[in-house]
Image 1 (cartoon, rainbow, N blue to C red):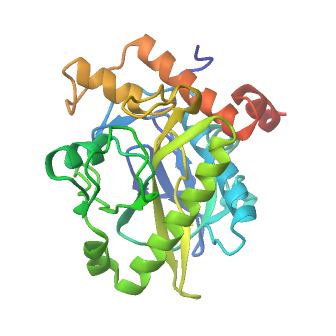
Image 2: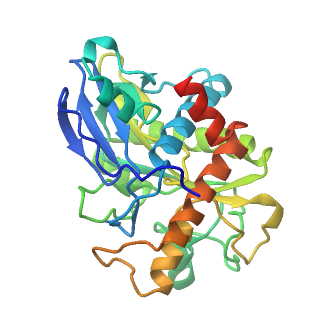
Length: 313
């Protein structure tokens, strides 16, 4: 399935590295802009696995760029951090470095990131279902009795934030009230408002293309010069979202997915959940690669190969 080896390390000696996360490496371009790069690393249950998924970083970057474009048209007031998909000549990257990051990097505005994961859930599944099954709540928010797993929330999508943990730690589900204690009521309200608005627009767009966005995770930052809340990081990717096949979905049963759930299920069923130094078998890597590329094509209307060839041409 994979045409090239997974790129799990992104070294750019020409630039100053500011941070390295589970998947992304962040470099400084100048006082106002950063270079976000996406490797092919894959993590599950807060652990980075030993081998990557070929082309994954390319898919994450290109699908995020697509969503920034789509959402800007559907929500004209929305601000985001993406400046360009091409590092400027002033970055001084070598030809080898340019080749390494082609298609998997974003030039972004340098902003103050809020320490929250802004999660929106349209359907009850995953940790939300686990909490509801025990307590009748989701992130501490009471929910109606009698919900089925993988069913839509009767009152529409709900905003359920979590903390944004340092690498190696786990995010903690919190209530909207607790989020306000962390970032202040004014910004918490705006983050919640934007999260729900972006989710609803994206869910409608995806549903028209045969995909259910069951839930997703956003990040926001503050533009301190304008006091505006800005959408940042990756957006509506198979890493940050649950994407289901709409044609096969029915309440009570999780539909086939185009996201990281396949890897989570493999780890859980193999007794490897949360274990370090796990190497994914070739067949799991290949199936994950297929799922990521399939949903990329369904949502963007372009195949992985076509998009790659356009960049290389």
